[in-house]
Length: 279
Image (cartoon, helix red, strand yellow):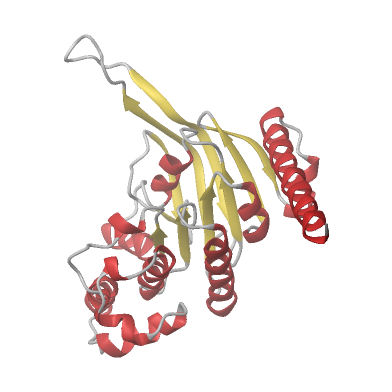
């Protein structure tokens, strides 16, 4: 396996405890284990507050779990690996977050935002990169004109800025990209364009994705497998996206049913609008 997470537990100190030294904690992730194969897209779906994003942070070293371990290419992230080995694990992973506005420093030009990742490679591999040329290549790779290189974030649309964030993630040549609600803030048509871009990049470079979302239609479009996350736990795992309709847990079934209802309503609205256009 490319990545394995085993028996991950995460808890946070509860707020508003009466004692300053209160030690009561709230479990947010409860004994979660997953695996990720090379070249696949694993979906993790759950409602807000389910713990899915907290769990995602443990997969890339942004949050140390209370218990459990994550391995990438057999190297432990939280175990007894050497500092150099743990650095290699973190180098293998990139991330694209939901809030592209806060992910991109408003005072930086696009060349500086992507340049951050290029400087990481220079230091890591002890090489010198033609940053202007490489940034232009990365912009074109994600479907943006190379003339964007001198623009500021506020001069780009949401979809364009998220493409810049994807370019920055790709720049470090990762094996795994964590996409944490990466399309949730975009409108429907832009979501589809960005998902198509991600699929094309995966096909070209062999990336493996962990796709965290609350949106089931995007999971069916992007993912090979899907995990349903609820109250800090995995309540259902579907190993073939085409078997999604056969879920057994009440939470997964309820989520599927709600999506089907929305689809039916949308289809009825489209049919009504079509009839009105002929009348």
